[in-house]
Amino acid sequence: MIIDRAEVIVTSPDRNFVTLKLTTDDGLTGLGDATLNGRELAVVSYLKDHVVPLLLGRDAHRIEDTWQFLYRSAYWRRGPVTMAAIAAVDTALWDIKGKAAGMPVYQLLGGASRTGLLAYGHASGKTTEELFDSIRSHQEQGYRAIRVQTGVPGLKSIYGIASNATFEAMQGVRYDHEPAQRGALPNEEDWDSRVYLRHVPSVFEAVRNEFGPELPLLHDAHHRLTPIQAAKLGKSLEPYDLFWLEDVTPAENQEALRLVRQHTATPLAIGEIFNTVWDYQQIIREQLIDYVRSAVTHTGGISHLKKVLDYAAQYQIKSGMHGPTDISPVGMAAAMHLGLSIHNFGIQEYMKHGAKTDQVFQQSFTWTDGRLHPGDQPGLGVELDTDEAGRYPYVQAYLPYNRLADGTVHDW
Ligand SMILES: O=NC(=O)[C@@H](O)[C@H](O)[C@H](O)CO
Ligand SMILES: [Co+2]
View 1 (cartoon, rainbow, N blue to C red):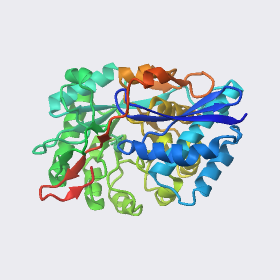
View 2: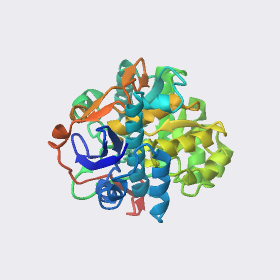
View 3: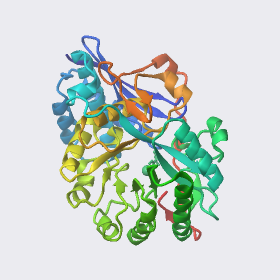
């Protein structure tokens, strides 16, 4: 079963997506998500100019050999562009192998370890009442776990809040921070850690008082705090029993999490911007986190993220795969197949894609009673309508960035 065609399809229905489509000599096709939000065209070139010529003529069955060949023959190791490109190839080959076997990918990975995948959604609101509306709306949509992000007094715009606050309005104006904002330059936003640290505990106090102790609540600090500030936040949120506190501090310096861990028992989730097991090695080995946040799309594909999660399982660390709208339906399907099969599944982030995206990508996953299931179609269960995709050309788009009051650039 030889790869004899490889296409890199860029489409921008509700936001930019990059998809690799491989076709074999016996007509089987496989899809891989290669979307890197705000830097999409770098992966397009990496695939088109450097990887596709190496794939044509290769045996599509040899997934591990292809992965090792692409990882080692590049010479230059790791990084988001390289690992997103390798992820797309790996995922597309698993899709093909599933179709060749007549089985959904999760069956090839060892079969189902659970009936469905607990998912969480993104409630947000500039004010407490808008936040409460958003939480109720997510509960009505069936979410059993909810991420809470709010405005911060004195800050003009902030991560995780829809540009148009009320949830009803969001039905039309979707929470749009994930799909990088379209435009020639990144939007500058403002930030103040001290105001944020004072404000967040009061938000969770209000949410717990309104919604009770049971509802699993998550929060994303989005890389903005120093380790001691992260420790302070984790400790101040302990009375509210969070499911997890995410990206509390930039984790390139993995040992920074030692300080946070010394001060708080709030569970920690890290890794959505990581791209290989080496980014995790210390924080897994020292049990400095509780959830691995990587998406299949950014971490070398199904093959590599499975290795990361199998390593994490030895330290009782679970998956918490990244699932914003800039993970395409192909990437989400790969996450669901992997999540269904592993023992140490934790939770799946699930932001619903837009209607135009669902027109471009035909999906077969189900969302029932707050749990996702990839479905039982052979392969990943996603097909891409190339004609529909052709209707939405790429649009330059960037993620925002932060500056502090004195103009210093800060993590967004
Ligand atoms: O937990 N989810 C997140 O942090 C996302 O909102 C990321 O900022 C975007 O997906 C980046 O493209
Ligand atoms: Co995050």
